[in-house]
Length: 105
Image 1: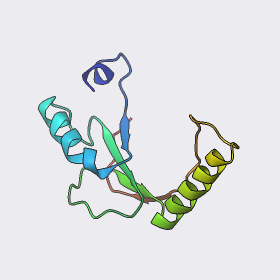
Image 2 (image 1 turned 90 degrees about the vertical axis):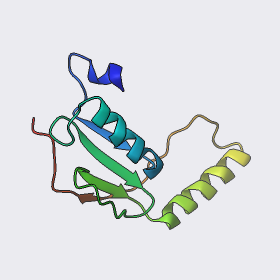
Image 3 (image 1 turned 45 degrees about the horizontal axis):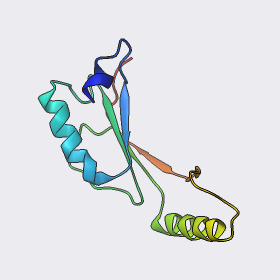
Image 4 (image 1 turned 90 degrees about the horizontal axis):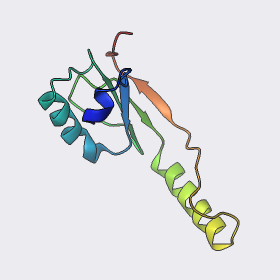
């Protein structure tokens, strides 16, 4: 995280794919003196819409649990049948719920 933020062109946003990492990230950013969202926007992606009390979060992207389950089952069957070998990418449809904060460019 420190090395990313020290780059000549540091990131303007971070996207997290699991809520478990949100609180540790926010704590680390606070300790590093990074202001969210003034210095860095944070977006959370999950399998369900989140209820998060931290108003600094820029928004959430989510896809229903059913879609994740269908994709996991389909991918596993493809892998078992030899149609797909790891590593491989998946396109997961997400719905964006915008927040009211964004880092100014």
